[in-house]
Length: 117
Image (tube, rainbow, N blue to C red; front, side):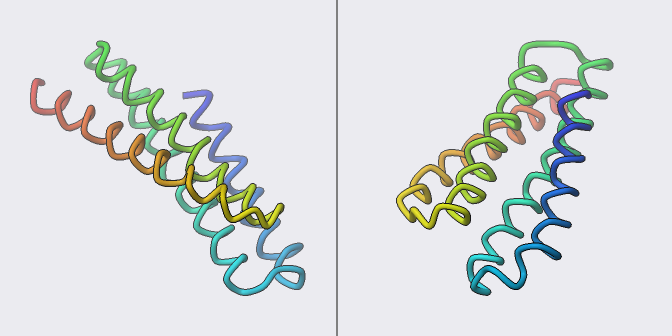
């Protein structure tokens, strides 16, 4: 729960930073990439809160895996997009899909947990 709440706070701060400090400094496409990173970080911050709730109700390795997959996905997906925005290194975009796969795997773990419950 703590990681989800912290990630949510960072996401809000990033969104505000993007809207106010970066709007005049970035090309529209770069700003869009930054906003995508913040949006997906928030989605998965909320998902981590769901995982915390699910872990209290149905503890097990799949719930734990789901949480860590969401954390990894946030770091890889959102982190690579944030880094790409600030550095201009487009090669970092190759990391982004790995984060997306982590997100998908985390959601599928929750599907299995729900199906078993």
